Amino acid sequence: MKLLFLTDNFPPEVNAPATRTYEHCMEWKNQGVEVTVITCAPNFPQGAVYKGYKNKLYQTENIDGIKVIRVWSYISPNKGFIKRVLDYISFAVMSFFVALFIKTDIIIATSPQFFAAVSGRFVGMFKRKPWIMEVRDLWPESIKAVNAMKENSKSLEFLEKLELYLYKKAKAIIVVTDSFKKNLVGRGVDPEKVSVVKNGVHLSKFKPTEKNKDLLKKLNLEENFVIGYLGTHGLAHKLDFILEAASKVNGTVHFLFIGDGAEKKNLLEIKEKLGLENITMLPFVAKEEVRKYISVTDVALVPLKKSNTFKTVIPSKIFENASMKKPILLGVEGESKEIVEKYQAGLCFEPENEKDFLDKLEQLYKDKELYHKLTKGCQALAKDYDRAFLANKMLGIIKQNV
Image (cartoon, rainbow, N blue to C red; front, side, top):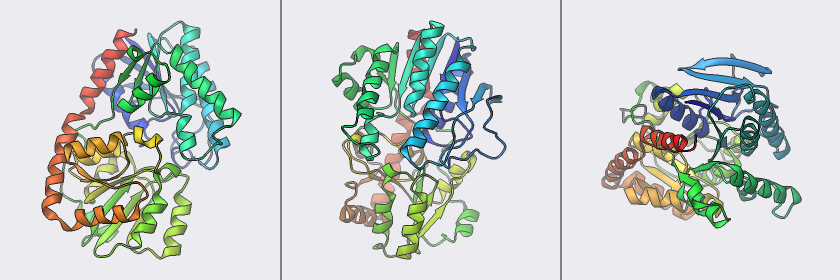
């Protein structure tokens, strides 16, 4: 079987969409599927092309047996809604034209970003091949959640109509949470058309390990209880709230933030303004370094802005950190909270509730018996979200729709 995958993010980028797509494609390749990925020059989250790459019209490479075609797209720092949309649309247009010349039996287009799915729809139509829409983000609904567009604007109305059109035209829809499926079905999408394949973790890649002593020494964190956040620094993550709360934390608790994004500059300014000496902020690290940095943490911080929209998401940080036995300090309501509480893999605080955040943090810091119990819950959670199993589940859905 020949499979064509359209995605805006792919390694060496290290965000959740890139990791999920890569690990799924690797599992499928190992089962004899001929996988071709169309993506753009790696640039996320800084909006700058990675060293060793160029933003060329067309270039190819082989990544672990996966044929990767990189097309030109408009690339700029993630500052402003219009620039982001130009980035998305340019990739959709370029991926569409290139995909027309690729032999395939089926097309998958994933969000984010949303316009990749538009490309997938028209590639499938012109090539007369089935296409599957993978929904990783309820876009444009998530735009409203971060106030990036006025709720009653004509543009938003158009995007919502386009969204429903894509759901209607896709041969099948794969979503990453049960809440997403409920949302789509509630808006008139046939439930038989929607399958849930959640995020997970490659257990062999994220094994529990001792803290990396050299890195602890380098970061001067040898005597600290480290709260780690590794990921995008965006509007949705509400890290400014965390920094302001950190000013009230005493003892040897230290916050380690790793990553980049639209809010990084603002966060650095807040850190400087408040004189926060218990916070270290580093740029994003390469994928092969992620485990080493997770190893030096004691707790994984997973916050989002307080919004009904974010009750439907499950941040992938949960699974990688749980697999390394790092209890989760979760500031997300809804389905994520249900998972963490079900497995007793961490403590949950109400998003943007400073008192609740500080109380839960203190419990993790002081209650050693509770902490040990939560590490065991992390192991159980990770085992049930094995990436290899989930990739095979998705491959079964794909084969049913070829």
